[in-house]
Length: 116
Ligand SMILES: [Zn+2]
Ligand SMILES: [Zn+2]
Image (cartoon, rainbow, N blue to C red; front, side, top):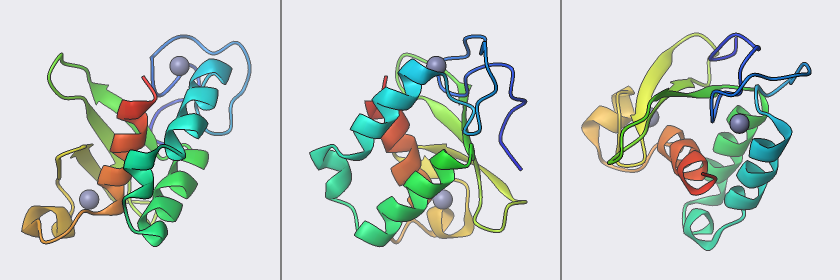
C-alpha cells in the first residue's frame, strides 16, 4: 500500500513523468536521500531512522496539508494498513498520542520537512 496514487510526487505534488516506486520525482528523491543523512536525523535512534527511510523507500508517506507553519503528512504504518497523520512534532499513532517518545513516523516527517 502506498500513500497516494502514483501520478504525482508525494512530496511536492508535481506530476510524475515516469513510474516511481517510491512516489517521488527524481529531484525530490535526491533531496530526501540527502535529508536522511542530515545531523538532525542522525540524532534519532538508528532503528527509528531505518524504519523511516524504509517507509519512504516504499512510498509510505505523502504530504497531506501544506501550511506555512507545519506540514502534515499521511504515513502508512508498519503493518501496511493503518495510516496516521503525522507532523514533525506530533503523530496520531498510539505511541504518538501517548507522546512518551518520538515514533518513526515523525522521523519520516522530519526527513520530508528537511528535504524541502
Ligand atoms: Zn517532488
Ligand atoms: Zn507515529
